[in-house]
Amino acid sequence: MIEPRPSPRRVLLAGASGTIGSAVARQLAAEGHAMTALPRAALADPAALAAVMAEARPEVVISCIASRSGAPKDAEAVDYRANRALLEAAKVAGAGQFILLSAICVQKPLLAFQHAKLRFEAELAASGIGYTIIRPTAFFKSLSGQVKRVKAGKPFLIFGDGNLTRCKPISDDDLARFMAGCIDNPETRGKVLPIGGPGPAISLREQGELLFDVAGKPAHFKSVSPKLFTYAERVLGLGAGLSDWFAEKAEYARIARYYATESMLVRDPGTGQYSAELTPEFGHDTLRDHYARLLAED
Picture 1 (cartoon, rainbow, N blue to C red):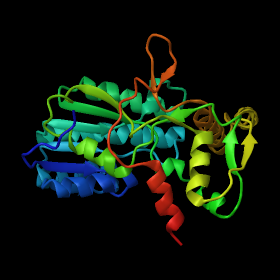
Picture 2: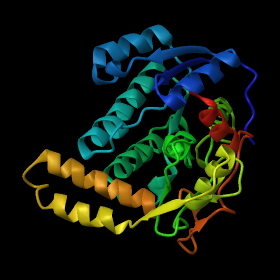
Picture 3: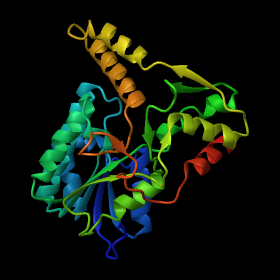
Picture 4: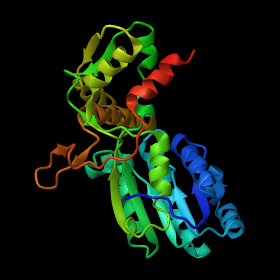
């Protein structure tokens, strides 16, 4: 379904310094688009944002920005307000298309950043501009946090039995190709597109088994109960009304519990269950090859 469009466009990219944004920037350059990277600071400065827009004259705007922490104030500032400012500036500049990098987890919104993303998604859909909302599953980077542990001979940490959640992880480059392929693509316009990498869906335990196999080490695991995050949230929540510090830490505990217990797959609207079969696949990069590259690094 996703194929690069033949006509180069003037594209303004927000979030080009991030992991996904930098991959999108490389892909846009490879396809011959005239890209302008929007400085993050300009999103909080209307005059600077207007000046960049006036110079870039974008036909397409792509947003890869996201709150770094997921804390309520950060989510409101970035996932909602910064994207909203970008949308308004895009409309004033006469851009014909807005491509948004969102997240598949917003389909079951329990966290502040998810609600902020959904608020902006709704405003984008109602804005009148041509839009595409992309909701990827897990990134390779988010599944790479235990590579150093395994390399050092430590156990792979799992939640429960390690089979509570599943995902179809997608590489930065494959996601970038998918996003760039939405430019001028009538098949993606006006749509919300969940997307994963090449399957099958993989559990946390299977991620560990794969990582140990690539490392040539016997698999060994240490189980952590997700209830620990629930207890932490309750304790920290006692002070949330008195201190931003406690409120943020309570939200971090909620985020940790969410990712420990919720799959990053499409939810079946009929059953409410996560479905590997309903989660589209794209690309060719594999998690095995990604792990091999990381393990080979000094």
